Amino acid sequence: MGWMTFKPGRLVCPHCGYDGTTPPQKHHDYDYTPFFWLEDATAGWKILAVNGDTIQATETYDLYDDWFNPRIQCGRCFGEFPVPEGKTAGFIEPDQADWGEGGA
Ligand SMILES: [Zn+2]
Image 1 (spheres, protein in one colour):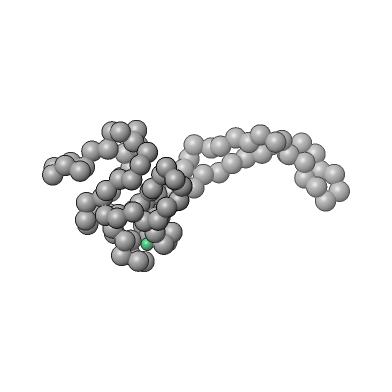
Image 2 (tube, rainbow, N blue to C red):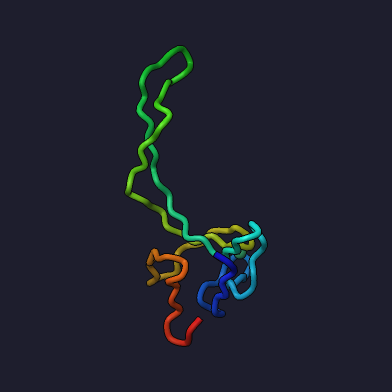
């Protein structure tokens, strides 16, 4: 996925004023990302034994589905800020982005 141009005012970082209308910075040769949707999750490892100071647990973990603490991270300053009031996530494929009225 390459660079996406955001329309002015759609999202604005309260820390640095970045709005996604220009590339934030180059993370990788192939991917510019103006903003990230972040959420936390809980991972659990099964404890098998306690040996001295070491709690021995399985190498594999279970990731629980109850994601929490949604927020947005700025791709320029990496500051985090709350999801704007009234906005919700709609998870889609990269080629399905729809900017609504007015086009991209
Ligand atoms: Zn920022």
